[in-house]
Length: 362
Ligand code: MTE
Image (cartoon, rainbow, N blue to C red; front, side, top):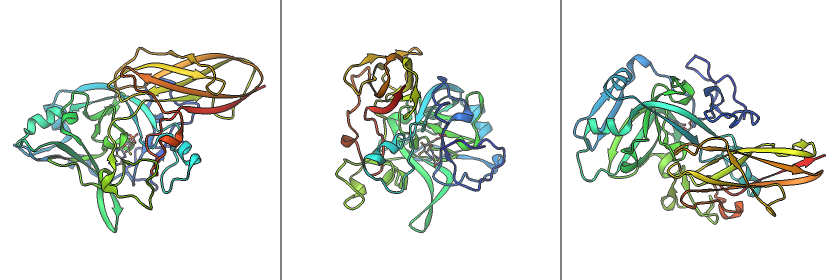
């Protein structure tokens, strides 16, 4: 899915935009340039007038708020945080090759990026509104974009637990890498929920509601729920699903790409690794012989919470076909399952099996 000219200034798009960077540009830098940051949209980018934009904060609050972007910038302290955003569908393509998955985007390894986000803390805005009831347990978001489900339009939405919403890492971002938040990434305002699947980071944010229950939105109640491998479209009861929140530990080989023809001798292997953000990636092991022997990869940066780790390893490879494999651990001893069979699910979410690819050395 190559990125097209998604950064055009116009506010109309003919098509639903879903795109990621070319693989030779993926994870080259710790912070992903805006023009290389993947885009995941469930419908067309909404039309709106920036001048009349308001964020409504309501529900179990002492004071309802209706805030313009200028008021958010003026009344709430600006905080910046470097955080990785990863779509729950990242690496779905490998799951699809194992067993078909209907009606979902077959993302490769490119539905991930890291940006410096800046904006107000969601917690500060919630404090200004005041939590009015002990029953308040969830914070629901709605975007300006509307999606047709069962013959009715519903805004894109989702929710997170109140505890996470009050955590200092959760932002209402109006800047991305020092620029105004680009339209494709949720201008004028989006939620950024570091460590969680990207789906909870609602773009074009229009409403925040403090409530007792999780959001009843389609993308909380039907989409972005995890099911064990034996559940399929034929026997699913969506009420039983597990709403996805934190990301599991994952690691991916970005270079060389699958099927590459390489020269015998020194081969550099590079990639990314990610955890739930609360725990640092502490170890990445890479194999060039299908997992018979392993080498510890070097990190290219100091470990940071909420962000991916980029890693690098060198091998001396003789001619022949080689299977490369990567697996990672985080500081809480979480790691990755060996096979896709154990994590396959009919929606193709959060594939974190060991990443494998084959290269040919001549
Ligand atoms: N917010 C709205 N309003 N509409 C959407 O379709 N997609 C979600 C999330 N927020 C979405 C949204 C999903 S599934 C992901 S992975 C992230 O946005 C992607 O953010 P990005 O496009 O800035 O990379």
